[in-house]
Amino acid sequence: MLFSIRHQTRFKYESAVQESIMEIRKHPRTEGAQRCLSFDLFVSPKVRIQQYRDYLGNTIHYFDAPGKHSQLQIIAQAKVETGAGPVLPDRLPHDAWQELDSMVNNGDYWEFLMPSDFAKPTPLLDSLAAELRVERRDDPLSVVTELNGAIYGAFEYVPKATRVDSPIDDALRARRGVCQDFAHIITALARQYLRVPCRYVSGYLFHGRFDQDRSADGATHAWVEVLLPGLGWVGLDPTNNLVAGDRHIRTAIGRDYADVPPTRGVFKGNARSELFVSVQVSLEEALAPLEQELLAVPEWIPSPDEDEAAQLIQQQQQQQQ
Image 1 (cartoon, rainbow, N blue to C red):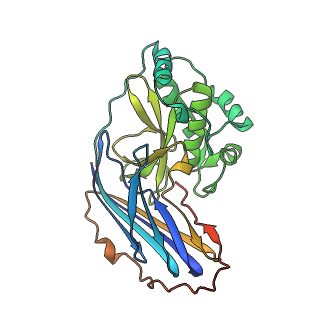
Image 2: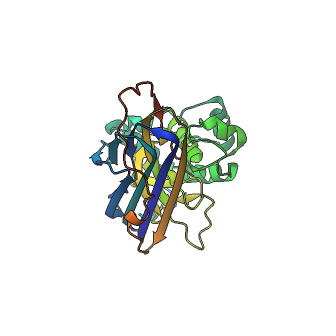
């Protein structure tokens, strides 16, 4: 499948800020059955954009906008080709748990087994694990796919039910949340009770006309990948009770959301900011040039030397739906 993706983020400040420093993780990965054929990134005001690749293979773009500005707009556009993933068997052999343990002992998967900022044990998680009978039995594939469906059935999908920085207990207590919450919950369960390496995936999901997805269109998406013997990393989407396939477009992987937000940064100033986000994922559709979408944002205004009372304030981040 061939997709065109446009992801727009705009920060609007109630008064001009003096400097913005930003990291961006919107570049789709190229690996396995997914290829990023092209990627363009535009920022207004104009900045010098640089990039690097981290140790997990994520591409991170970053920039510094040093002058005064009242809004900051970031538009990423990509063309991505995806193919069908491997066909999964109904189950794995009876000795698959032992094979998994051998893989873990001989590999370097500790960071995907340890608790992380948003995926760590709590008493409410203990209760859910007992309720869903999260324990080693049968074979690893059967257990994790059953868990994927169990979380889908146990939680209601409600946009904005939680915040971008909500701990898993908020969703566990209310039994409602968004894809970010469900990905963190299944991650914590897989690591703590099954000892299955599990990593968080940030990206996009194409919503076809006849697809029965409950996740929001026009937003980023999140799911997980678990390590299974003989299969490697297998994607699971507890929000929609899916095995990740050719509609899932992977942008970044990490321990949890804290590692892979689409945007993260700070600005220098004392002003409130508003965040506006728009995501388009189109099937074989040509999109207009990015320059036409950029809002008219004034060029930088030199900062006065006497304005030394400004403070660094964390930029808002986008919750994954």
